[in-house]
Image (cartoon, rainbow, N blue to C red; front, side, top):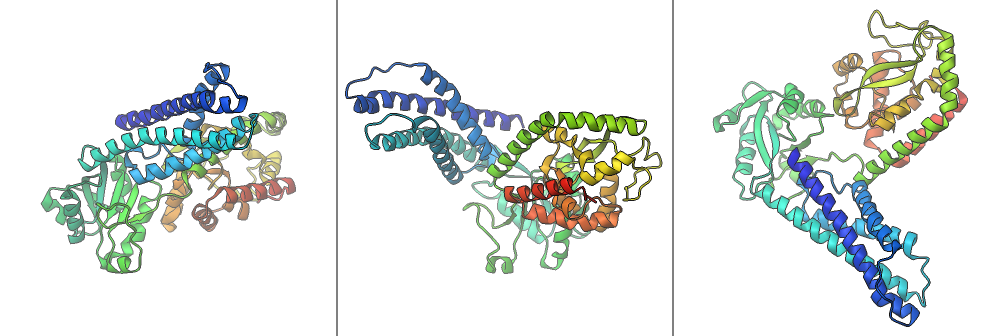
Length: 472
């Protein structure tokens, strides 16, 4: 972990340095080449206040843009073609922004000045940024190929296929980065990998524990054609763990075009794409979460005060209701809501509420219809426990009950839970486990179709529910 943080730090420093150096060279280029053309006489190169502002703020702008575009994610898995494409895209977007914000209001003799300014800044930034990044990426790739960097990997299955893929990866001259820590078997007989010294870590239904115990980053599913019925159950077990999942293809998968090559040197594996949205959309979604929740906590302060007084006067007990819920990757957090029930309503154990639940206070019933009880969750969004839009978080007690009938519930733990969701808009509050399972399909549909546009639609429908006061 520390080596990865150090590598991220080197990328950040390289981007800051290349951004500052590119801006300095561009500033000198403008003074020595472009401004003499504009004014008709030589212009002395003096580092004025504008230069110093730029040399501080411009590198920070590039750092923010690289962060938003996923330039520091999975830093040890980067490859040179990706580096080229991403640096090119970031450079184009960044230079366009800088051009329109800082350079377009320059007085010019003709428009050729603009073209030369744009191309000079783009060439300098892209050239320097890509140079430093390709050096760092090439060094990392060499370490992966030489097995100095590896990703803890578990094989699912101990049959001939698993043994063959293990032997193939282990004997590759250029390693794809898999460091095998062991295997889990699917049935009692597939334990051939013990013959090559790979330890058995448990059965397939213990994968979630194995992943945590051995800090697993990648899982390769190797089952025989007759065992394909296990794949869906194995995938459900892996949902929400955050690991990379690869599957050994059979000939049908290869002929049908399911196998996509991600590396010339790697073994032929189907990679289950973990990307729900592009990195830049996830980053922008988080920016929107932070800005919107900050603004809401400030602007809604009067409403918070009124609701707080109403809750306090309605019944004895605290204003806010705090409860442990399960969030992204199965991590617990404390959710905050306005208390809508009488105090100590769950003294007999966890219970779901209904529309006629006598535990709900009069003001609580109104808050639930208008979703006003959810407003304090903007604090959870600001902290990063939740998002504005995402599947509603549940308690572990009810998650265990749902998993008994719908193991694919773990799919929801791939993303941050939200204040509102497609399931909440379409279905509302669930009164029993059966309704929670029925609502689940809407949340899974949301994850499979997740985008900023879908988030905006869900938020718009949520506002309508609040204004109409017809929330279930």
